Length: 346
Image 1: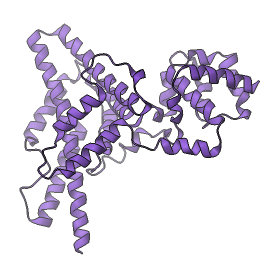
Image 2: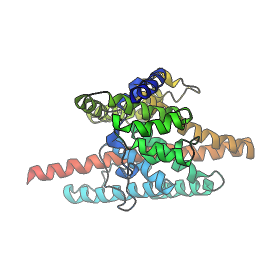
Image 3: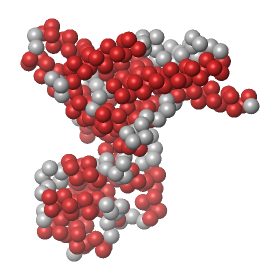
Image 4: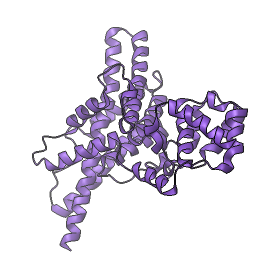
């Protein structure tokens, strides 16, 4: 019976044509996945020199606070701290990784404009939604927590959700899991109610259950590789630090992201993308769509000129956050290089 069940489910999963997602897993299913990059109890980490880590900390902050303000103030403080350290070490009080426009006055105005729009446009909810989507775009949806995966299965009732959670907690299915699988899939009909993501999660455990321990370990190692956006960030960083005249800047990063994530396209067929690109594109478009819903609301409630003004203010924050996150990377690199030089000279 177990093998019949496995074969039935395996065929259903194979028909979904999502075998590249066999590598979904397992080591990233911690209940503190968001806090790995931003723990509100510990606060922000010092300026980081890795762009992926910088963006993931921003994502975690947006998810927790529902506002870009705490992250902006963190980067402001880090620039001041690192500039003071640099001046102490080198005597240079003018050099800074902080952009020229990144004055306290302009940033206060940026925060003020955002706060004025916060309540009427439900920007707290937007920030939290975008924070989650940023994480999935950078790291992949298979690294969602068990709680997040269960919450997405709206068609399952309370009992079925509890059964689904129990199955998710297994790295792979064994013969001894026959009774639980039968209860959820055959007796309860839970398989038919699962979303495509839910079926992916079960499918990977079915496939891994048929593989050797060595093969399962190979899948885990494969998923440790860089995904689409992480690889793009890495490529950008290498290009940036090889450019002595710094002609490469955050504007290039923006154009690279737009091209890679197809953000100039209104409709995207996600089936055309491989597993390293699919989630990056999908969740980036989730963010784009979330902003578009706010813009549609603005268009309905305001005059053409009024709507345009509001949209400019919103996008000004988005553009500024990109530049601010980029500047955190530069500040982190500056501090790391400075500490390395001090160590070498001692």
